[in-house]
Length: 134
Length: 58
Image 1 (tube, rainbow over the protein chains, first blue to last red):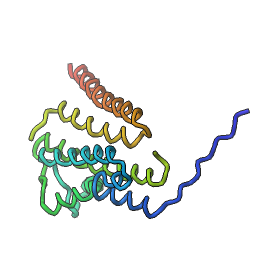
Image 2 (cartoon, each protein chain N blue to C red; image 1 turned 45 degrees about the vertical axis):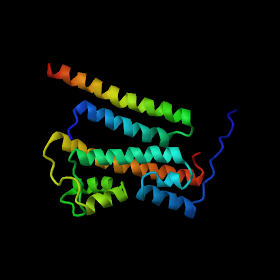
Image 3 (tube, one colour; image 1 turned 30 degrees about the vertical axis):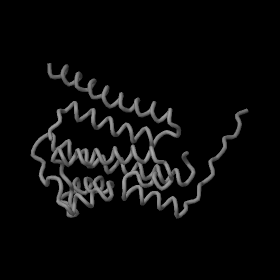
Image 4 (cartoon, rainbow over the protein chains, first blue to last red; image 1 turned 60 degrees about the vertical axis):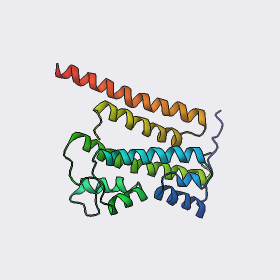
């Protein structure tokens, strides 16, 4: 007869786990840094920052807070995931508003994916703080 | 800055694979292995799709 599987216990959400989530979102890698995961945090920060900067250098579009259509709203969701990088880019009017060549379209996707990767990294930091992950 | 299509894919795959490797696995060895696997899938998938489109076109 098959043995009963151990049911994972639900981890309690703490203030520190929320802090890790928010810090990781605002500053790429910070969620790992505050838990002394220096190497992981550095690699995540470099990856997100590199994707974001490369996107800007390729004349990618940074979506503004006043979307024209539904697809623009999805772009904003991705961009905002970059946290402070998006705020700096939006305030400094970095990036192009209109895509005029293929590499600029790649750049736009790089910027969006940088934000999405940062969200994944922030959730990972949250899970580490909860004890769900080593 | 203008990257070629394939260079853009490689750069994209490199950084995304790092993030996937770190966030989806628990220990260092598995992280490296999974990151390399993701990179190979991104790059290999692109090459395979490129050849597929070439055959469709010709």
